[in-house]
Image 1: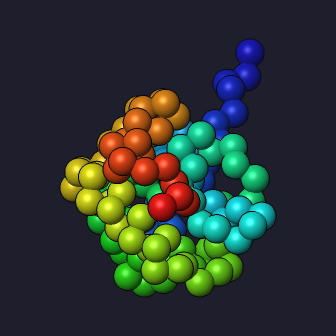
Image 2: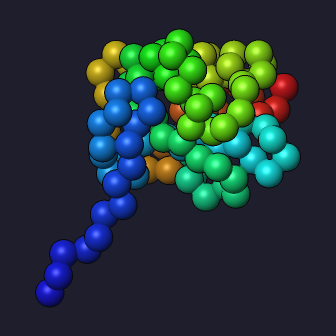
Length: 115
């Protein structure tokens, strides 16, 4: 029996290729808003980041997310991403389910893309 296929994605911060489930998806929705997508199922153009603070900071500093999402981040969207990055540890979080990722986002006190 062949092993099950594991989707791989590239982190826009560190450029490492990892399993999709080990990363957080950032999405530019059809409406043009940039949001954190813990389920990985929202419709729109997506980019992936490791669950490590350094990757998020680097992606924001180097504008990698702007390039990957083909948009310019609004100040409020960039602030949401920075606040989320501050909740992440220096060492990478691994093995989280989509629900655990959603709980990380809920800890900010706001849902993604809403102010």
